[in-house]
Length: 508
Image (tube, rainbow, N blue to C red; front, side, top):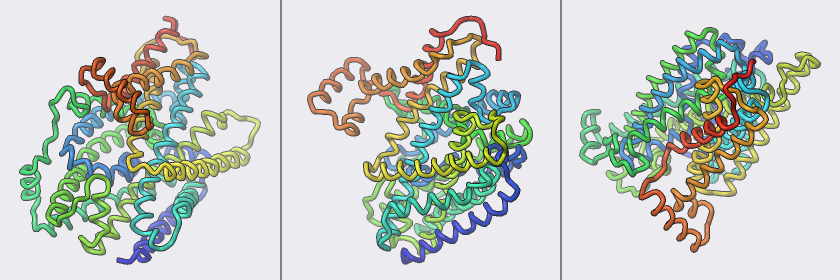
């Protein structure tokens, strides 16, 4: 299928999103943008959040992991499920009890203004980097397989996509995103299922035959029992649980959709439904990965990792229709994370940094003008970040971003854990210092524990690299820190807050 025809399907998809946005944003106001007037249907929120929880990186990267790690990623998915239990029955009751618009208002009520601003700032930093990295990876796939041959430059592709996202989120915010996420999640899951069926038919496999073939290749193994490995099952499950708690339960983008549901009970139904569905969906992504490797071997392809799915889907290895479905599924996986992040960052900056809801000196029209200006500004920031990632041009840039996320969400985890688990009062003005030092300490530990990673990413000199490697061997005795870096960071933050605290709880 020609790149021009594929691109026309992409534009048609955006046209549908714009129509949905126009319909849902009628009569919207600031409350519609920030929390959907607390009138969102919990079933729509639960279904739409599948796409937000996965992203375009999951669509491409999770299938690519099967070649090297079999189904080990499912260990992390089990941890996700545990994390959602904590969100549903500990965090959500707290947020609803306090009637929060921004979840970081809890930090202000519990500790003070500095803690509040610190938590919001760490969220803004992490979500900006994470969302733009995910967007870069997907835009780059579209660029390589479709737009380069049409003579369209990368910067124009990124700019046009951000303008389209801006258009359909500009007025309605969360109220619109609840519906566009539902549409996009439907397209993503449809694309995934159709691609699985297409490859099984190409190889003349039933589901049972597929699982048998994968088992023969050793690709169905889930649990890693090597305690020294970063993929050791206890570390992966525990890490997955804390990733969900921090990157969903303590993330304004994810939680603003949950607290847009009218009642706590409805929001809890949303989270628990999502947790069960994600078990199945992630299994399907892993199944797709196994099928792709079987099919690549069948076709004599040597492609692996993130390049495998787009190469098979957009090359001449399947039907043209599968190529269209893959592209629609890919952008459907991208935009629930990009549009939600843009809206959440606007909400957090307006409410947490500018204090827009407390500004009695501004009328509703002035507040709306401020909110629209912030929304446009973050769109420009997104564009600049995507261009920086393009300039870096690192094929594994997502590894950098995931590691950075471990640093930036760690202080949030420590702040919320200290507030919920203790009754101690902290010296609020020192909270920023603690939350800054904790990631620095974690960076030093990580540098000595995983010197190979930093040597590859930072270009450290050979002599320094050799010294780091020798120190790592003696300090850690072969132990490798993996996904648990977030937990370590949160623990450092918790301990730091303890040192600047006193037994008396500060009254809100």
